[in-house]
Length: 256
Ligand SMILES: NC(=O)c1ccc[n+]([C@@H]2O[C@H](COP(=O)([O-])OP(=O)(O)OC[C@H]3O[C@@H](n4cnc5c(N)ncnc54)[C@H](O)[C@@H]3O)[C@@H](O)[C@H]2O)c1
Image 1 (cartoon, rainbow, N blue to C red):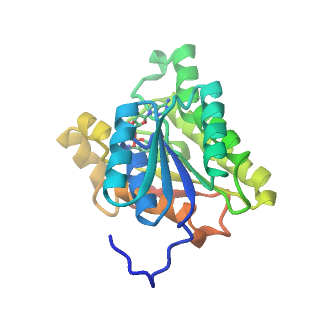
Image 2 (image 1 turned 60 degrees about the vertical axis):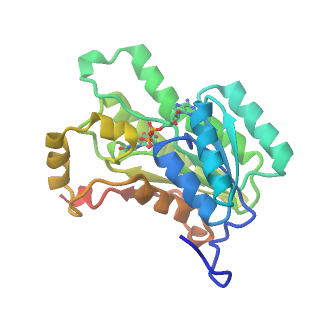
C-alpha cells in the first residue's frame, strides 16, 4: 500500500507502538500495517529470531522498527521492557496485546496447572503489558487486546480453559477502558474467528476447513490481515470515541 502525502495518516505518524507476539501471525500482520501507516513499531516477541525478522522486513520497507525479546507472561521482564522503552522513546502511544493461543482439550484433560497456564498465556500477559504500558501512555493512548470469538461464544476447536481465558480478556478490556478512560486512553479488543496463521494452517484439515467455512456467511476463514485492519482502526485516531468494546472479526460467524 502506498500513500500520497495528501492522504490522512490515521494519526499514526510519530506514534510508538508495541506489538506483543509481533513475530508471527496476527501480531506480525498488525506490526506490518501499523508501520505502513507510519508508526514506529516495537516488536515484542518471546522468539527473538521471529521478532528480528519482522523488524528487518519493516526497516527494509523504509519503516521504523525495533525487536525486543520478552516473555509477556514474566511480570518482571515486562516491567523492565516497558520502562526501558519509555526511557528511550519518552512514551508508549499504542499497545497491541496479541500474545495468547489455545489448545484443543476435553474437560477431563484440563488439570489445574494447564488451566493456570492458559490464563497466564492469554490474560495475565495482556494485564501485565497493559498495566506497564499505561504508566507511559499519553492522553490519546490506545490499547488493543486480541481476544477470540471463543470468548464471546465458545470454541469448536479449543478447550474450556481457552474460551474462559478469552472471556476474561474481554472483561479485562471493559475494566481497563473504565479505569483508563478518564486519562483519555481507549482500550478495545478484537474477537477473531479462526484465522489462517501458519500455526492454524498446520492444524487445519480440508474437512475442518470446509465445515468451518460453511458456517461463515462470508464463506472464507480470516487472514491475519483481516484482523490487522481492525486492530489498526482501534489503534488510530478514527476510533477516538470508542472504548471498552470487542469487535467480532469473524466474517459474520455469529449470525449463523
Ligand atoms: N489464529 C487464530 O485462529 C486465532 C483466532 C482467535 C484468536 N486468536 C488470538 O490471536 C492471538 C495471536 O494468535 P496467532 O494465531 O496469530 O499466534 P501465532 O501462534 O501465529 O504467533 C504467536 C507469536 O507469539 C509469540 N509468543 C508466544 N508466547 C509468547 C510470550 N509468552 N511472550 C511473547 N511472545 C510470545 C510466538 O513466539 C509467536 O511469534 C492470540 O492471542 C490468539 O489467541 C487467534
